[in-house]
Length: 336
Image (cartoon, rainbow, N blue to C red; front, side):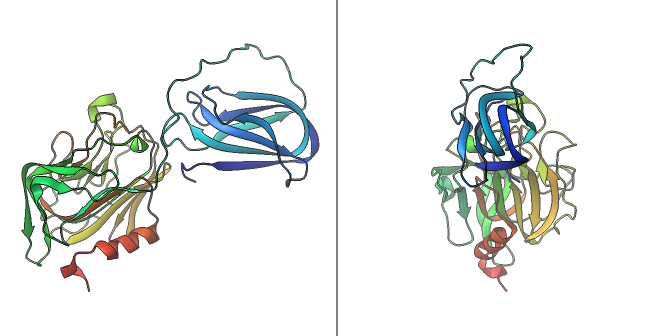
């Protein structure tokens, strides 16, 4: 599964029965879900049992009352209050009769959301290996537009293999466009980059970051891609339990295509098209005051090495897609 919408759950009650109440307990009870409940006698012709497509009220359970005869129920989740929360339920129960509810309370409607949806776009990118670029104003090739601004010591250089790339000494590039809301909270993403790290240390060497670690100061509210030997050597999330390391550290002083993907459920790390690590994750990415930073994190942790290209998407690339991307973006002098 992933965090895309809509998603559907169909239930067979075994025979046509009277239904008077349906109670649904969603995964995250404190945030609202927008959904449609339908019923059918034969599984082919459907009618609406409850339309909560514009719902702004959270609850556990959500209670929908209506007297109908049906064998099948179908729950279609359409959206959530927070960006990227996935469609999941703890329980869904159908009752043949209504009954008294101990406390007839209804939560106040939320003024927030619903969460922004992925546009399935490449948000940002550049490719230094294909042509010479002026670092005083490096244009973003993604849909967000804008330009990358140089901070500190970064230059366009040619390495000993003839690959033209950004050489980071102690500097970074910052995009002059805010981080969009589809990357907030549990929003999906993919980051892909061609890099060469002369020496992978125990700390530092942040390749790319896009969250504000100080906003919530909580685990999983921060995401940054690294290339070092530590427990967060692949992905940092502000907590050792959730950080991701490389199972097999990419060889130093060699060119590698490093990719991280997140689909709202699983975070995966690939090196040169091969899956290196994977973990189940639920994020609370804090992006409201964050910036896209290439070659450093929001507190420094600068990368020292070469970067030929970088791309970020607002969805999770499949292994087949990232394989094609690796071939497409491979620097010319590295092609076999």
